[in-house]
Amino acid sequence: MNAEVKRTAVLGGGSFGTAIANILADNGHDVKLWMRNEKTVHDIATRHENTQYLPGKQLNPSIVPTTCLETAVNHADVLFVAIPSKAFRTVVEQAAQWLTPDTILVSTTKGIEADGFKLMSQILEENTPCSRIGVLSGPNLAKEVADRQLTGSVIASEYESVRQGIQDILSCSYFRVYANSDRFGVELGGALKNIYAIASGMAGAMGMGENTKSMLITRSLAEMSRFASRLGGNPMTFLGLAGVGDLFVTCTSPLSRNYQVGQALAQGKDLDDILSHLGGTAEGVNTIRLVKQKSQDLEVYMPLVHGLYAILFDSKGLREVISQLMLGEQNTDVEFILPGPDKLANLKRD
Image (cartoon, rainbow, N blue to C red; front, top):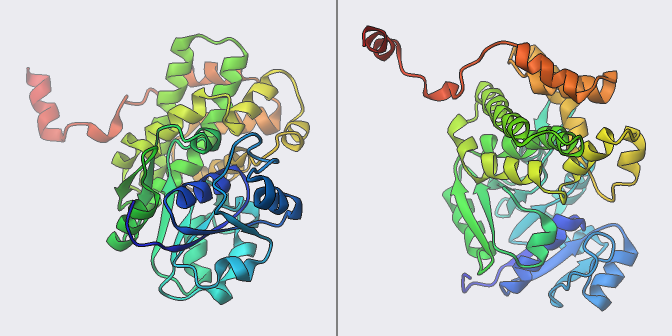
């Protein structure tokens, strides 16, 4: 770890916010963990365990939990925001009064705000005095991180000081942080992959073959990169941990909440009941609504997104959606590496 001890804070006492706080504490930094639930604060302070979101996972005893937002935010050098997207703006607006232009802000939330199709880092930009903003994303299942299993993540920011700073305070023997300057692409990857995890969970519960699941995942990656590219992201970002890495783990692990939603849907359960018993936020459900509308506005071809919307909100079946995919437009396999017109002409002559 970097020798300089930082004053850090994490907003959000869910599973991933708690896991990030634990890494920071393991690395010797001062850590305040803010949440609204007083019982969880008490449990972390006395039992060193988040009994609601990470039961049985022992936390570093130096973490300081609090329900006071001012106590958490004031004087923090680095602030991680791990709040579900539906409450993200409200908490950020409240916290902004204690932030300074020197504070580094990092969003870990993989969601999109409905009003204006805003990503979480854009909300940070618009509602705080801070300019040094980053996004942390990747295949980071919180329970495995809390178990200190080997994990890779990505810090994305236009600012080299943010990338280097977060690498310094988070990197350790079990958590490796890679850098990327494509903040928009990394953040979109984290939000979009939740959509396809629902389809993958359904496919798994319905006993679909490995060929089918492989096609779902790879065509999901094609849709994600196509959509992100239209919005200004770099499609090559999706070849890394924040793209294919995060998509793979979310689409194959029963620890993924979005995967669990898909499994339950395939078993005939009602969506509202599934979400009420989930024990956490499944961002993919809301993201499907937003991306389906945005893809129509931008005229981006996303048959899986539109099919999943039909499953969740129009009562269609997954087999029907896959059949429509097989009969749909015959796209290229990897559209961002097609040769130019001159090379195509040479290929035809050969």
